[in-house]
Length: 272
Image 1: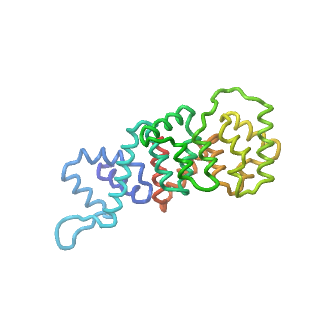
Image 2: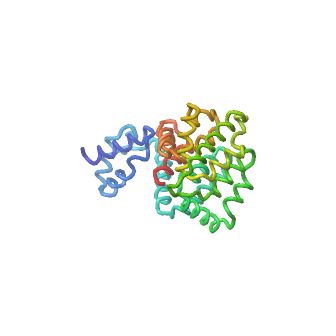
Image 3: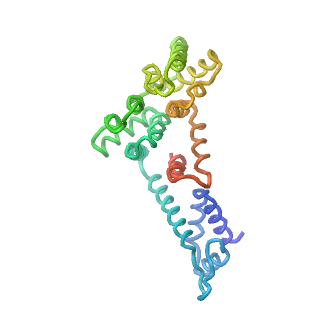
C-alpha cells in the first residue's frame, strides 16, 4: 500500500465516525511527505478533495474542512491530557463535571470509584491546589437535589484496600441492601442511609463479596434490582466491574452519531 493510500484509508476511517484510531499514522505519514506526495493524495481522495472546475487545483469541501479541524482539535486535547499528572487531570475533570451540572455527575462517580484510594486522595489534593477549595465542599455547594449526600460521600472516601473481609458483615450488608431496595422508593434509593454508607465506605473486595452474597440469597443481580437508578448502577460497575462500565462507554462513543460529550468520553477512557 502506498503512503497516499494509507493516508486516504486513515481519513476514510475518520470520516466514518471512528476518528481517534489513526491520528498517529496520519501524522507519521504527513511529516515525511513532499509537495508532490500531497498532490497525489488530494487527487486520489475524491471523497474529500474535489477538482475545481475552473482552475487546476484540488479543494476541500467546506463541511469536511470543518470536520477535520474539529477532530484534530480533539487530538490536540489528547496530547495535552496525556502529558498532565493524573491527579491534576482528574481534578480538572471533576471541576468540569461540576460546572456542567446534573448530566455530567456520572463522571464524578467514575473518578471516585475507578481510582485507588491513593489516586483519589491525590486528585483531592490537586483540586485544593488548583482551586483553593476542597472537592468535597465544591460538590456540596454545587450539587442540588437527592444526589448531593451520595456524591459528597463518594469523593470523600478513602477505602480500605487490603484483602481481609468479615463474612458476618458481608451477609449483613447484603440483607440491608435488599431491605432498602425492596421497601424503599426506587426514585429515592440514592438517598437511603444504608445504601450510601455501604457503597461509599466499604472496600471493593468486600463489595464484590456482598454483591455475590446478594445474588446467592435473593436470586437476582443487585444492578437488576435497582431498575432505572443509573447513578447507583454506575457506582456498582465502577467499583467492582470497571471493564463492563468502560466497555459500555466505548461502545457508545464508537457510533457514527456519537455526541460531543460521548467523544470526549472516548478520549478520557483511552488516556486514563
